[in-house]
Image 1 (cartoon, rainbow, N blue to C red):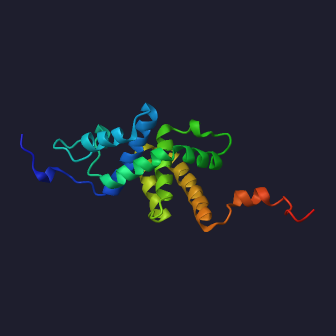
Image 2 (tube, rainbow, N blue to C red):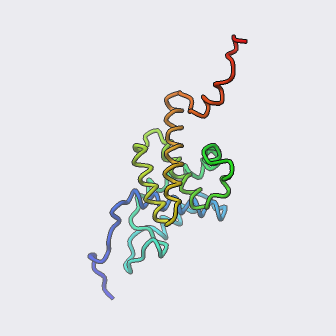
Length: 183
């Protein structure tokens, strides 16, 4: 059966596709305790690209993704999992431990926070919007609202840390303590 190029629909948003793939790859790494580089190779060789029969995300294929972005996001998220867990522990209610989060949400947060912390990161509102789109691709309930709230809170903390100003929580914790020179 012959296929024409007209049937192949390239990804309209290769950077978004890379983010989706990075979340999927990190999920696989966490769940299978897999090696980062072997998962990256697996994705690039077997899951990326438009297929002749038109497979989609639901079929396990990712349309033309930005491979460079995918690789960078996956590596940095895998290397920052403990840091992300600590951040999430700080911003989640004490009644909602990180391990209670859906593993896909944990992966999404790791990739998104890793991207936010890059020195040349896109604007925070762009990152949050991208990961809201990713969340809507995985979840149909309230999870995207959670993603929005958590990423917004983490973004404010990152901004405060870069500016050298303490976050509101740190200020509240030290407000009642006297200075060293005072009694």
